[in-house]
Length: 305
Ligand SMILES: Nc1ncnc2c1ncn2[C@@H]1O[C@H](COP(=O)(O)OP(=O)(O)OP(=O)(O)O)[C@@H](O)[C@H]1O
Ligand SMILES: [Mg+2]
Image (cartoon, rainbow, N blue to C red; front, side, top):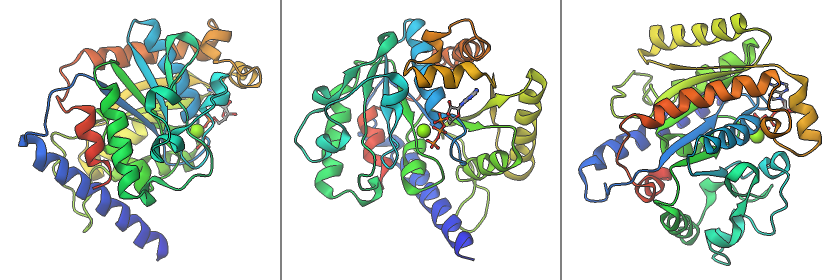
């Protein structure tokens, strides 16, 4: 019962966010911007979001995109460990008004910029007016300096995650072939398609949603997992879900984490890295598409409405 209430609260938030974003499309706030935002989300925790966000950032940078990676997992931030960087400051310092985004931003490996978060700070949903203002201001500062913003989101469908994902042009929903991960990925996708009363509403103009299957044992398992999710989304939500491919399960991934070096740099020829390059190719194709002209500033303004 509590779960049901929580779920309806979340879909309510997602619905409200979408309505507001659509409603404001014609406002003058709808200033032009060219930064493409990709949110890496899941549903279930531990399915590989951080691994994907870090390595896809580097793969896109290798294709000459100017990429900035934001650790948005305010509860359990750890992208800095996977990247092998030791930041002195975090989002927390920006939100408190002690530092600017430029102060906390660090150069990551593979030509990416990285904005670190710290573990255990208050959830974004609890931010004060002042902190929200700081976040908007910080985002505004980096507008136009990057082609791609990648958000490494936390697990689940909290207000935080739904807010960040709703601000993105592309939502990458990560799932492993395990039934629990598939169920949770579907719950994440559902927040984009169902209003508080459980009605399916028109998603035109919303972010493009895609599935990325991680830790597949084979190409076939990757494709079947995508098909399963795409079919239920089409049948029950009437929502098209793109296929962003699959990443094979590969022991080089955890070996690279232990060495605090992104796998795509440490083991560029391993099977996981080869899959990552293929996914980056699909994303690059998406980046080439005409994108929404919402400025990053505009999107952040709507994250918490
Ligand atoms: N393709 C893969 N092959 C083998 N191991 C993998 C693969 N992808 C991820 N892993 C391992 O799975 C674990 C979880 O990965 P990661 O931390 O990226 O997940 P997450 O979704 O970000 O977790 P959280 O929900 O806690 O943020 C890590 O130990 C990582 O090394
Ligand atoms: Mg993570």
